[in-house]
Image (tube, rainbow, N blue to C red; front, side, top):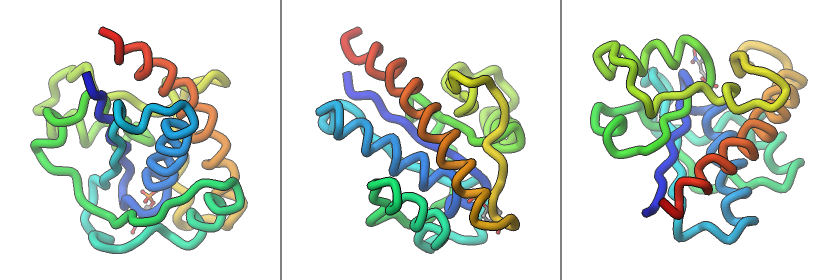
Length: 158
Ligand code: 4NP
């Protein structure tokens, strides 16, 4: 069965576009493009239709990851049913997603750093910080996405 993975942050211009790009890059590296679909969305609607923040683009390109073709969108009700994995960047995003799921303990909602081999926590919002914040975010996203992909890949054969 195809696995569908959705990354979610607040604006869908900084963190979740990076996670989408990194995860897709890893999926391609493992030859799984036709088995795993990747997307991202924001809980807020301020930046709908915009491309990723230039600072996210910069750190992605520097690490050989493409964010081409991405454009911000807001999470929709149907997303929670459509995607097998709904992966929030921080506790606020997770809370908003659970509200959208009517506060249920919806099993498919996770926080990205629950998969971080260096320990759980939030991917901090880098929007109002300096560019070095994006390097910190990138490193967290990259190592968490690798571990998440191990889990998603394990579901493919089931
Ligand atoms: P993101 O960062 O959630 O990682 O995309 C933000 C982008 C925009 C805003 C906040 C966070 N904003 O307030 O416009």
